[in-house]
Length: 231
Ligand code: ATP
Image (cartoon, rainbow, N blue to C red; front, side):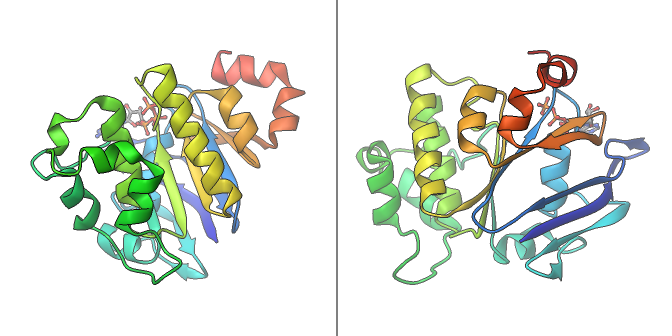
């Protein structure tokens, strides 16, 4: 579904990625792991077309998307839940959800289905995004991405800074999406939850993939988690 081959991405003269390659297949849940500042967000920003790679390619469903503007990449079926949520604070919850929605027919995500998944969003439908709690804003960010009916959902630190109960709700939501066959690329620090959810992990260190394997492989390699994740 998604093939990233040798991407190199720079911020001005400072190079952040040095040839990242990874794949996500249909129905797969894949993670990007690594300490702060290692290049995870830069990788997903490059996949989404928010940053242009100096080298390498991003292919989605057999077509090259690197070089396309971000809105065109999103239209191909990539949905991002960005770091920091970035909901529209001056739009209501309902408006946030429908602003970027893409209708994919009866089987797709609709306003009713998303607010059934997160009932709190229905309760707060007429409140402004900026008035919501952090957890509610995160649900809104996930709901907004689902409303684009993405073939691949990408989440960047979706549980960061949230209370334990809300985190659990978000992990349960992701489990449900996985069971329904949703392909997901996820960045998070909660290795325990990711080990339950993921098919494959990629560990990124200083802009390079340094390890890849299944959750079972990672559990058998404590030296890897210690070295690259500090766990
Ligand atoms: P975090 O978990 O802290 O978000 P990360 O693994 O997602 O970490 P990135 O945010 O991709 O890491 O950062 C990779 C490198 O690029 C770091 O050295 C960072 O300082 C640098 N970087 C990130 N954003 C910018 C920017 N806007 N301008 C310049 N350098 C940046």
